[in-house]
Amino acid sequence: MTRQRLIEKAEYTSEIRKSYIHESEYKHAMRRSRESKGKFLTKDELKRKRKNVQNDTTDKSHTLKTRTRSNISHAKKESVD
Image (cartoon, rainbow, N blue to C red):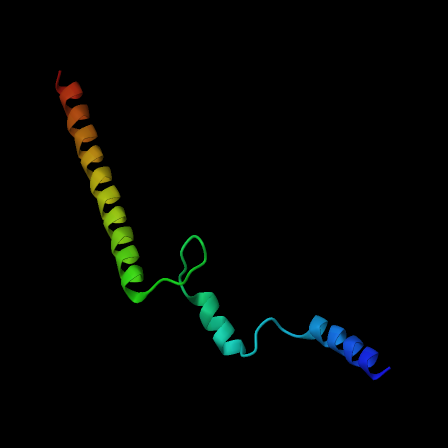
């Protein structure tokens, strides 16, 4: 009979129990950057990722400026003709 009570108690507490022990560690882990498969990124990988994102945004803004300038100069040529 004692074993049955222990099993019931274990089932009851497992439903209530949190999936983590320390809330601060849980919050820290949730804020960390991860790969697509869920693995945490190292500091070096994170730096490379941020650098690539910055380069991508710089390239896009440069392309946008270039296209805008060419469109303006093309529009000026048409108005002169």
